[in-house]
Figure 1 (cartoon, helix red, strand yellow):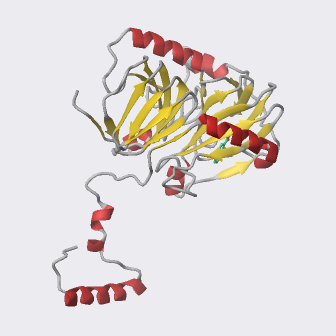
Figure 2 (figure 1 turned 90 degrees about the horizontal axis):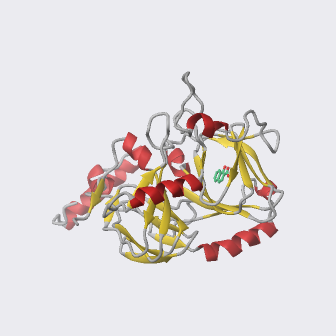
Figure 3 (figure 1 turned 45 degrees about the horizontal axis):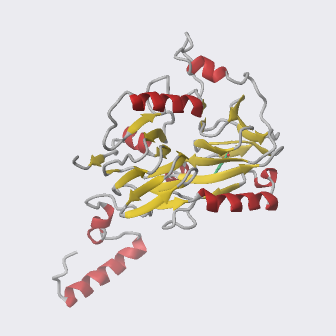
Length: 350
Ligand code: 1HN
């Protein structure tokens, strides 16, 4: 408010505000600038979690608690500026999950949607809505809202992945539900590969189908296919100065984002390639599928290696420099923001 008021006027106002409080009212003019800032000022900080730091602690947790007991044995990636809030960005939860050989993360379901990005292990599997899929390094897997899901590991080494959930968004709406199943594993009703055959082969069922509502019916986008697409696409274009070679994960039913609340995409950079600065209203989580380089976000620069996880907050300028050939898996709340008419981005002049 106006700083030019006299001490008497200030005292008079304070006295008035004091009489508003018991009736649960407050003066808007004292908080208007915070409620409607000229541009977003994220409470989240840019950050990088190095996999070399995560991995030993995650494996240590494996000796402390079983997947069964924990229900989900996960180290939450907490944004350094948002401690205790289970958020990686302002609106996205992220964590790193471990399943040891023979373990089961028991079946449950919840209204928050989840994605997995596989970091380590070739013999992990998840069952979603009655279909199993084997999870391999770099695979992008979706657990739609309210779908039963359990995970397991049939190999002889650890299986590790990055979880991303829209928990803060669902919590904002106070719309969260969850429940456990009466058995560790939910029954399978379709053979492995069924969803990919029906929805992920440039073919679609003849009759209309409703499988997961607003979420893509493909629930495993295998890295092998993603990598091949990026390799060919990168050869066939002059890379975009801001996006390099970026392809987004799509819902084959409507061409939109694969998940209604979480947008996901992959970026390929050749060795030495550098992107121009851009910013957007979505805070972005970046998992390094391949390569080494540097992310600059909000004025800080982070060197990254394979399997590191980084965060670029909302409206913070960001750019990437690849030291070696890189593939970056990215996700954010962009798909929700677009539906609400809130998404904006700005790209620096090039
Ligand atoms: C969840 O269900 C999983 O299914 C992982 O693997 C992380 C974090 C919060 C709430 C539910 C999973 C989760 C979660």
